[in-house]
Each structure stands twice: as structure tokens, then as C-alpha cells.
Length: 175
Image 1 (cartoon, rainbow, N blue to C red):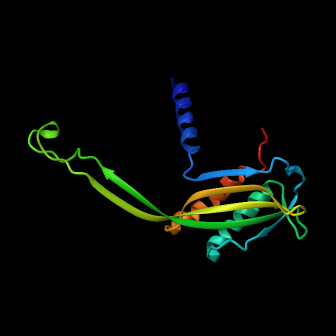
Image 2: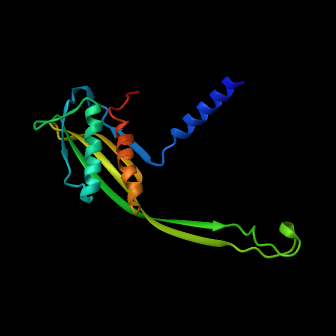
Image 3: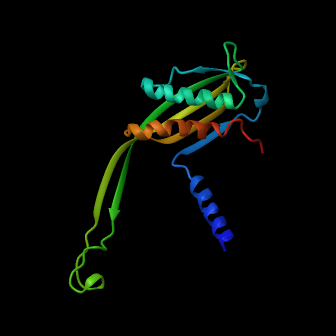
């Protein structure tokens, strides 16, 4: 019995940890040979973030690239262009009329009322473009969105997480 409970708990834990609050996707050039890329150089011209967040993105990206076997260099195989943006999101929530009852309880006579709430917040995204330095063509792109821009504590944790999730898709697994 204990064995079955352990298997059930392990399965539930695995299922819960595989869920991500981020939307991460990637695309790549079918003709690119990713085994030829050994060095990179970061380009941050389009990384319009404050210095704190910029350091978070670049530190995690450098760490992830080195874990993939790439080294920083002045004559690189890849130019890595990092961008960030955000957009304003409006969530609208409407409640159903079940909750305000009149005489006779929930199935008796009465009037229900719809209620609508809206909330506005900013959601951030990070884009990582990898350009072949020789051909100057985009060979891989990873995009991750869902960063809570308006919450500094959340952002502090989310930026390294989303960069790591983006880089999980590199190098691409050919099918």
C-alpha cells in the first residue's frame, strides 16, 4: 500500500512541477548546423531594461550558454541579440448571478446580480535571437512571456527562470 501511495505522490509532484507560468516557444532554421557553433557574443542594443533586470537577464543567459558548451569570444560563431518588451494586459472577470438569493434559499424566489471586475497589469517578454556571424542570418529564436513586470519580488525570481526555460529549447531537437 505504501508503495502505491509513494508512486501516486511522486506522479502528482512531477505533474505539478512540470507546469510553467510562462509561455515559451522557439523556432530555428532547418539548414543550420548547431554543432558548429562554439563561441558567442552578446548584443544588447535592443535590451531596454533597467540595469538590475539587464544584469539578471545577461547573467542567466551567459550561464545557460556556457552550460550548453558555448564560450564568449571576440570573433564569435553566433551573435546573440537579446530583447525585452512588455504589454499592458486587462483581465475582466464576471461573476454569475448565483449568490444573491431571495426568499426560499438558492432555489427560491429572488434576484441575482452579475458583477464585473477588471484589473490592469504589465506582462513582460524576453526574446533571444541567435544569428550566424558568417552569414548574418537568424538561425534560432527563443521567446518567453509571462513576467510580472509590476511586481519586483516576482520579477527577481521570474527573469532567471524564464531565461532558463527559453534556453531549454537550444539546441533544437531535430525531428
